[in-house]
Length: 237
Image 1: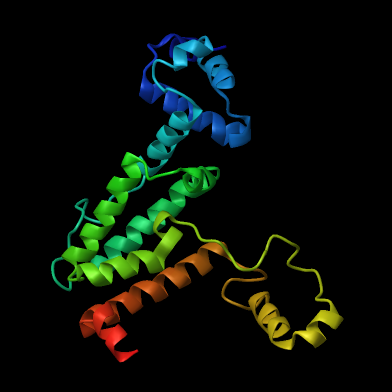
Image 2: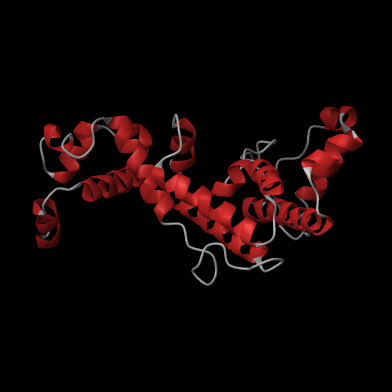
């Protein structure tokens, strides 16, 4: 153990140090390996010392989520809600969501832990509130903002559940029998995995994420300009 590591282990224990050590441990060994005993060992303390700062593992996980979400950048300019009526809300929301994506890619366990929470943590509430403020300052009604937040779903936090599993080999030839039975799926798969395509030979997760995000943001802007409301839409139904 180096002198720096020894000094760090002897530093006074506090909640922030416990949470950040847990994040580092989950990054290195996986969230499944995280336990109060393992974390105490990493910090060089007895497990009971941790309970002065986090009541249990669920509270530990809540705090870890807040550490990750707290690392998400503010919108360009550093002020939430900038833009004014018709201002550049789109760039601000896009910047924030792509920052969230970078944060979750650095901590690949975080999305699963966020989904496992029984309610939003304080940092998550602040993040959502700031995002809503950006929409509202950009000229969105509360009604349209509500539906925009629903449409974005988990993309607000930088991830989405994909319909297709693209983890297999990109170079494996398609099964001719399946291609004959499902010709349109085969055609789409061939186009998506064409080495001459923009994303190259295989699905580019970042490209696909940004493609969908931009479609949504541009659609929201069109609705905002039209003065869309859910009440008017229901009247036409």
